[in-house]
Length: 43
Image (cartoon, rainbow, N blue to C red; front, side, top):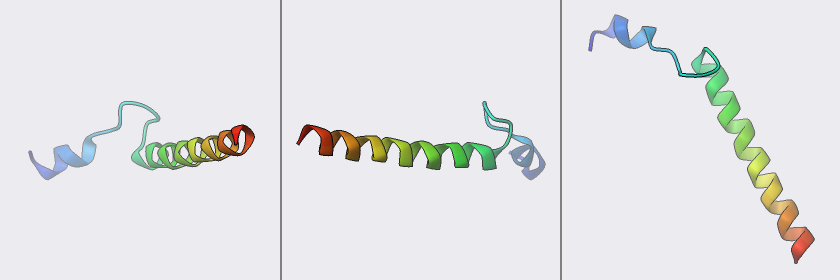
């Protein structure tokens, strides 16, 4: 694959890779927070 083609690839949603990475990190912390809350509530 030519380098110019690789740099033109865009993620399927959100329009840029920086937004995609930010969404993944935010969702990661949300899920961990929910697990912590559920653990404290049900223990």
